[in-house]
Length: 156
Image (tube, rainbow, N blue to C red; front, top):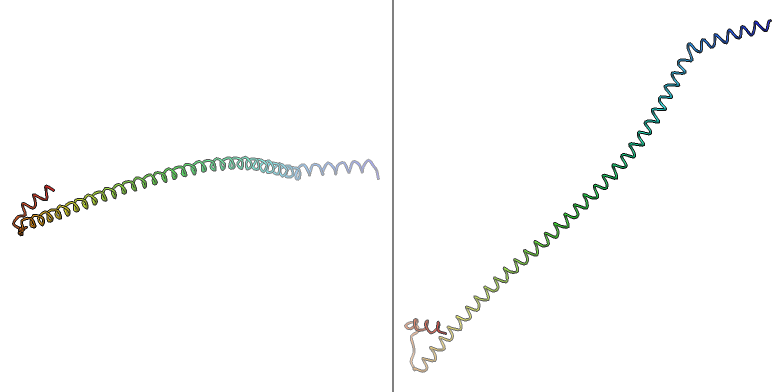
């Protein structure tokens, strides 16, 4: 066998193999590689977007947390203010109730003093009548002399 013919035969077979690979195999392999490259690039981009969104979400979360803390502080301040208002209102109500009780007690004391004065006037009038009766040695009719007794009471 001739070496040159073998090399030429192998060369022709090689060229047929190259043509067959280029025509039927090379296109699908390159398209699969391009698709895979595109999927990898999309995955990396999605990973970067996810990382960026995670950072944004963390930032928004911290902002919401800070805002919530501020609102909580405002609510606590309002609650403390309302509590102090309620305490002041209760103090005012208690003071007004105390003043009302004091005024009632003073009015009751004045009534008791008036009743005591009237009782004392009555007793003084009776003593005066008794003294006058003893002086005159006769009995005075209280019903007949009520006007006289009233004027004596008023003078005392």
